Amino acid sequence: MRIPSRSARRATGAALLTVVLSACPSPEQNADAGGGSSSSANEVAAAAPSAGVIDSALPLEEELRRFRADLPHVPVALTGGATGRDALAREFAGALTRADTASLRRMLLTKAEFAYLIYPASSYTRPPYRQAPSLVWMQLEHGSETGLRRLLARRAGRPIAHAGASCMAAPEVAGASRLWRQCRLRSVPAPGDTVAERLFGVIVEHRGRFKFASYANEL
Image 1: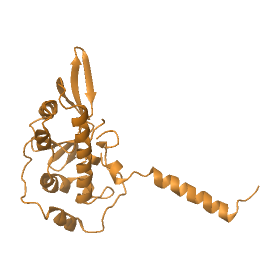
Image 2: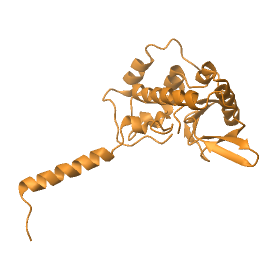
Image 3: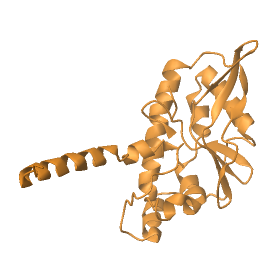
Image 4: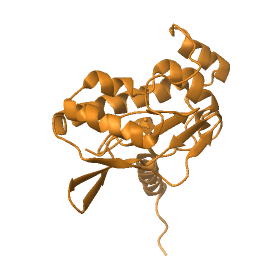
């Protein structure tokens, strides 16, 4: 049997390493805090975070202190949003039909709410999913901005016959919060015809209030 030369073995090893690295998801791919190229870590985050991604060697307390430094107040509850998943989806459908960007933005988790109410109890604070709050928030914002542009360009002004929201059967529990993943807006465009679309990312429930983590979607 012919034994490959040392240079041939090195070339083969390099090719295999390239394949392995290309298969590893980037933080943006992990980010959803929604569809097409901007699907759910942009959800809290729509798919679970990828293991083994550690953003910083700084202690968590210092990362949080820096992230919160420019925030004007400490929230004690979610503001805006709705009191249920279906109610939130109904408000979303109405605002999208009206092309009401201000209302759509009010349904989103704010930076302060994320920093004080959601992130501290999330899986992003612990190995093997640990990521700095600034990185997770950047992913959520990117997913929302991209998703909102697509929503307004492709669906704004079109009536939606809202029929509720459906998510995974069981939410992810994170402290006082519950994260509803893989959520879809159900609508009835014609009698007997129900359509389910992923037009937003994770729905965050915190002490009875519901908001969107992002507008990352499948459009």
